[in-house]
Amino acid sequence: MDRRLRRTRLGRRLDLKLAATGLDVTPGEFTVYVLAGVTGLWLVAGSLLAPFFGPIAALVGLFAANLFLGWQRQKRIEAFIGQLPELARILANATSAGLALRTALGMAAEELDSPAGDELTLVANQLAVGRSIDDALNELAERLPSRELVVLVTTLVLANRAGGTIVTSLRNLTETLEERKETRREVRTMLAEVNATAYTIPILGLGAMLMMNSMSPGALDKVTGSPLGQVAMLVAVALFAIGFAVIRRLGRIDV
Image 1: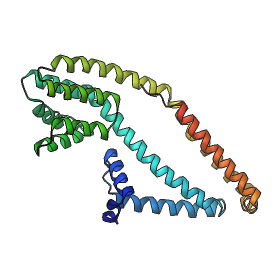
Image 2 (image 1 turned 90 degrees about the vertical axis):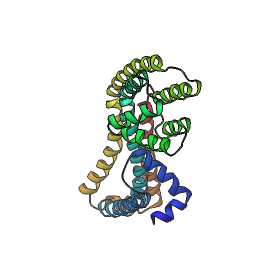
Image 3 (image 1 turned 90 degrees about the horizontal axis):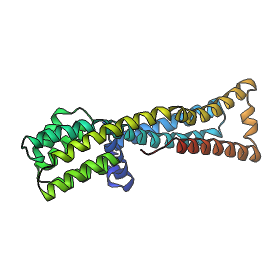
């Protein structure tokens, strides 16, 4: 299954997403887990609520799987951004000691923990087999896109092309990255309540349906037994989804 998936466009996209998350899971394994989870949600929703909610729960499961990959990728990017000041500091110290940029990147890969260590190890391995510094660093910026990493990669690429010392640039960049790190932490703290509210809204809707069905067994079966009731339920689910998306968008601030 894994080999067949990798031959398809969807499988290749899934492989790239999984590579960016750092999860030790193949596209085939992830697909099997998602299918099993979606099937379980379908059965649970059909038994606890009503058969009408089975397909809806399956679609929510697929959306949640994609959301999980995005969350895991963003979590890895945030962890990498947190290590960028230390990475810039190591590169500045190594280049000030007269080491080449390739050697400095290899040293940083050995000294830093995951995810920066893993990503830089991949860069060092690419350089060892003849890949250019520009291509290896640009691919790193594509895997873990962020403004901070783009600035660092641009600084290294330009210095590698033009030659000369980059110690001063890297040390100034280290101070800037430290300040941005603190700013991002403050923004994340202020928006924590907003993000929690986004997830609370759909949970309240699910809890209301479970309460209604427990107080009056079979109520959801009767409601979804008519076309009008099905339309009303679809509208309600859509409104909850829109509320979730809107609140998430309001709580997303790029720093």
